[in-house]
Length: 504
Ligand SMILES: Nc1ncnc2c1ncn2[C@@H]1O[C@H](COP(=O)(O)OP(=O)(O)OP(=O)(O)O)[C@@H](O)[C@H]1O
Ligand SMILES: [Mg+2]
Image (tube, rainbow, N blue to C red; front, side, top):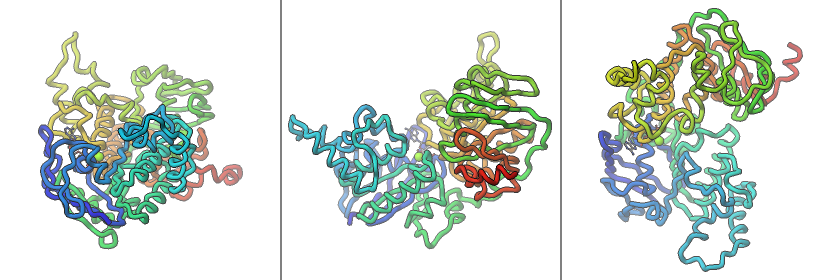
């Protein structure tokens, strides 16, 4: 079985030493987790392995033979395949599942002029079946769910006889069920002799499926640990360089008058008959599984889509958010779930992103107060803990988690009354999570109110005052947070508890 060794890997970008003499070894039937805070260098290390960069210092060897990997083709030749979180970039949407899995076969220079489509479909079907997957190979990739797209990429990796499979935060966008399915497949690949490198910020799942953990901190190698010799707390301490205490803020806001009242809200995205109220200084949770309607409800409140029935009142007056810009004027802020697509301008600087929602604060007669913009951006970078050499850095060059923090930071500067957060900690490391909770705690302390949508029940329990559980586009249950638990949240999020509700 093959063994891959990276030794003394160093990689710099302008102003950033992303990796500094990092060692990493993986081999055999192993699921090896790569852990570290946002910006620690995990993706960079894996991109080097996958041939995304032309230059790096240090050595990569496979079975004690030094290999130079400077292109994705080199990587593939050595059996290394990466599945990036943005699965779409690696797939051709208007081709079928079969064509995507068998891509090599189709574009290979040795390919005869006549392609045997029947054979290609049959082979693709075989690959998927071997993984226990039931995906129609004739379907266009553009019609698949994100989780199915991941599966197609994994199917392709198997077909290409990958020995080392890298999964960079594969579970962040998946539902619980989809995650379980992925883990089953990964376990099977391991049994068949593949080594899997797994990146995730969800340490519970890391402990569930991996044998080994390698920790990076600030671009440096901290150590490699056997799962049975360590613990979550231990790993957190290694990745942050300090102990993590008090994840959730203790001081919550003083709850005041009702600010937001939603009655019978029905509209785009299958949202129907939603009643909800929110008070000054209050954090309410929107709990629910992926597909329960949380994101759709957040968007509908924020003026995206159409309301066909019902109304929204702000401070006892009906308010109509015609579109998001109008919602912002009316005192709403939304940190959307799909931040890369909707929340930030990735090709602009951090400063531009942070100051955009509040641009009028820096403009007087068409003069922009650059000094003030810079100062405010710097403060905010510090506040949300964005890891960057300068506020002028282009957002696309930041690590995944740090891009998320830009999206959150930009709204913290705005002066909204109702803040809506949709899964704000997805892909964010545990240390920064605590920081985001603290910032939300500060918002409510200042009398703002917060809607916090998440499928992580521990966040609901730790952070909110009251919770609405969503199922199938509507509110299944309202709960007082301190009187509930994960089991009850799961019950209502999965459509259970109907009888209980009727009796109540
Ligand atoms: N193309 C680039 N240009 C400039 N800096 C970069 C580039 N790519 C990465 N970096 C920087 O290198 C460092 C490591 O980033 P990397 O993406 O490897 O972090 P990560 O550990 O994957 O973090 P996350 O958990 O947030 O995904 C960060 O400081 C990042 O800003
Ligand atoms: Mg990353």
